[in-house]
Length: 162
Image 1 (cartoon, rainbow, N blue to C red):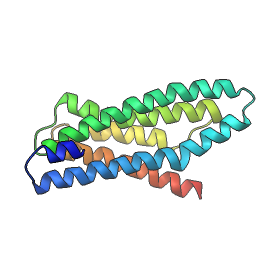
Image 2: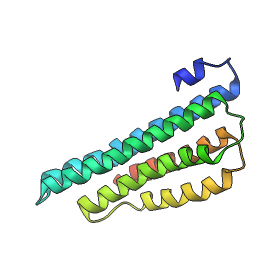
Image 3: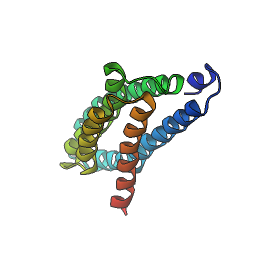
Image 4: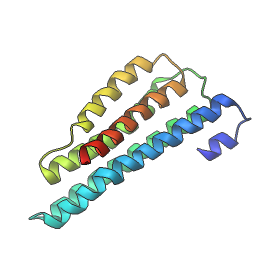
């Protein structure tokens, strides 16, 4: 994000895109460490077959990393050119990255715990709807919509955990 911001002349719209991208990154961290990481550790410690939990963890962590890379590329594009029209490729990155992240968490929770929080499928549905709704808008609108879904999932996790 820093390279994309520093590589272009200063602009308030680009600063806003940087703030949105950073907020989305915090939401990703929150989604992972607030709920997924503690549950994964507990599942591995209490499972009858910890190796199976480890294998699921490895596969889903790979999907999570791929999702985070897609999000990073979409954020970089939006920070560098926030007012540009969204393309199909950008939309796939901006919404597919968070979808892959949430899908991986959903799969892991289901495999390790037998159930997954409702926030994951609801987040996936919201990403699909917003991808279609923002496809004709600008890049900054795309990352804002995708980040809003991740923020909502993170808040839901915190409220549900309490």
